[in-house]
Amino acid sequence: MDPIIRINNISYTYPGSDKPALDGLTLDILPGTFTAVLGSNGSGKSTLAKHLNAILTPSAGKVYVDGMDTTDEGNLLAIRRRVGMVFQNPDNQIVANVVEDDVAFAPENLGVEPHEIRRRVDAALRQVGMYEFRMHAPHLLSGGQKQRVAIAGVLAMDPEVLVLDEPTAMLDPRGRREVLAAAESLCRERGITVVLITHHMDEAIRADRVLVLDKGRIALDGAPGEIFSQTAALEALRLTVPETTALITRLNAAGMRLPTTALTDEACAAAIMEALS
Amino acid sequence: MLKDITLGQYFPGDTPVHRLDPRTKLLLTVAYIAAIFMVGSWGGYALVFAALVCVCAVAHIRPKALLKGLKPLVFIIVFTAILNLFFTRGDDVLFQWKALRVTYTGLERAVSMVLRILLLVSGTFLLTYTTSPLAITDGLEKLLSPLKKLHVPVYELSLMMCIALRFIPTLIEETDRIMSAQKARGADLETGTLPERAKALLPLLIPLFISAFRRADELALAMECRCYNGGEGRTRMKQLHMSWRDGVAFLLGAALIAGILLLRRLGI
Ligand SMILES: Nc1ncnc2c1ncn2[C@@H]1O[C@H](COP(=O)(O)OP(=O)(O)OP(=O)(O)O)[C@@H](O)[C@H]1O
Ligand SMILES: [Mg+2]
Image (cartoon, rainbow over all chains, first blue to last red):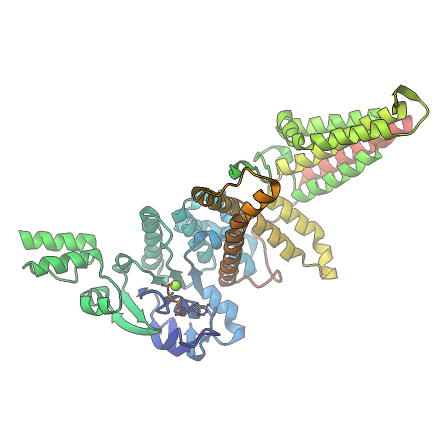
C-alpha cells in the first residue's frame, strides 16, 4: 500500500532559534492506520504535526501528502482538505456561535454546494455523537463536547487524515474518553488515518503504531507492545510507561511471569487472572 | 456577576416575525426609523404605536421585555424632555416661575421628542429580539454586498462581527475568572477613588489582553487548517430566501408610511 503521508528526511528550525525543532526525520504513514506520537515537552511533536498539512514547510527534505509536495503553494488547499487538524484548546478553534454553523465553516470555505454542506454537517455531527446539540451555543458545552464539535468541523472537509495535537490535554477524564472514542471509531469504522499526539501513555495503547520523538528525531518506532516493554529506554526519554505496564513490571519483579504486551485494562486483568488460576 | 449581562438579547421563537428574512427586517427597521421622522401629527404617533403593539403581539414579545430594554435610556429621555420643555422659545407662555418659562410649543416639542425616542428604540429592539445576531450579520452582509465593487471587505467585516459575537461570552468568562483570581490575592476592585479603581483594573486588563492575543493566534491557525482563504469563492450552508411573508411585511410597511403621510396631510 502507498503511504498517505511520506516524510523524507526533513529538518526544520524556527526563525530566530538556533537549534532545530526537527532534525532529519523520515516517516511513512499508511492509510487507515492509527499512529500515536509520544515525546517529552519540546521534542518536536507539534512541529511535526504542522508539517503534515503545510502550516509549516521543511527547511530541508520533503513532505508528500497523497503524493503532493507540501512546498508547492498550488497544493495548499488540496492538502489541507485531506489532512484535518485539531488542537488542544477547543475554545480557540470554534468560529461560529451555533454548533452547526461552525461545522459548516470548512466546507463553506471550500465552496461546496449548500445542500451538500448540510449533508456533510449532519453526517459529521452524527459521527461524533453531537447531532442533538447542533443548534446549541458552543460556549455552553462541556470541554469534551466542544472538542468533538472541533473534530466534526474538520470531518466536514471529508479528510483522509485526522491529526490531533494533544486533544485531551484540557479535558476531564470523561471528556478524554469521549474524544478518544470518537477518534478511534473514525479510524476503525470509517478508515480515516489518525495521528494522535499525546502526553498520556494510556491513550497510545490502542494505536497500531507508536512513535517516540526526541530532539526532533524518531527515537522509538513500533507496535505499542514493543515500545512499552522497553521501560529503561522510555525512562531515558523522560517518559513513563502506561499504568498497566507499570503494574505488570512490578508484579514480575515480585516473581510473577506476565507478558509485558498486555496493555489494555482488559488484557492486563485477563493476564493476571490467568496467572493466578 | 459579569455573566448577567445579556448580549444580543435575542428571544428565540417561531412566530411569523421570527421567520421573516433578516434582510426584510433590517430594511423595514430602517424604513420605520424614517417613518418616525415623517410623523407630523398626534394621530401619526398613535398609528406608529398601534403598529408597534401589533408586531409585539404577533412576535409574542411581552411589553415588559420592551420596557426593560428602555430602562437604561431613562436619563436621556428625561434630559431631552427638560431641554425641550424649558429652552424652547415662544410667545404662548403656559406658566412662568422666575426665569423658568414653559411655553405651549415647548411642551408640545418635549412630548413629541420623547415619543420619538421611545418609538425608535422600541422598534429597533424588536429587531434584535426577534432576529439572531448571526442572522443580522448574514442579512447585513447580503444587503451590503454591492459595496464589494467599491473594494469594501464586506465578507471580512461580517466574519469579524460573527467571531466577535462568538468570543464575547468566552472573554466575559475569562474576565470573571481573572477577577476572582485577583480578588483571592487581595485585589480591591470595588472601592476607592476613581483613579485608584482604574489602577486596580490594570492587573485585570493585562492578562486579559495577553490571553485574547493568544486566542486570536490559535484561532487564525485553526481557520487556516480549515481551508479559510478569504471570502472569494465561499458558499453558505444557510441560504437566505424571501417568501410571500416578506412581501406581506413590505406591503404593511408601505401602508404604515402612507398612513402617516395621510394623517399629516389631514392634520389629525
Ligand atoms: N514558534 C516557535 N518559535 C521558536 N521556537 C519554537 C516555536 N515553537 C516551538 N519552538 C521550539 O521548537 C521545539 C519543538 O517544539 P514543539 O512545540 O514541536 O514541541 P512539542 O513536542 O509539541 O512540545 P509540547 O509537548 O510542549 O507540546 C522546542 O524546543 C520549542 O522550544
Ligand atoms: Mg505541542
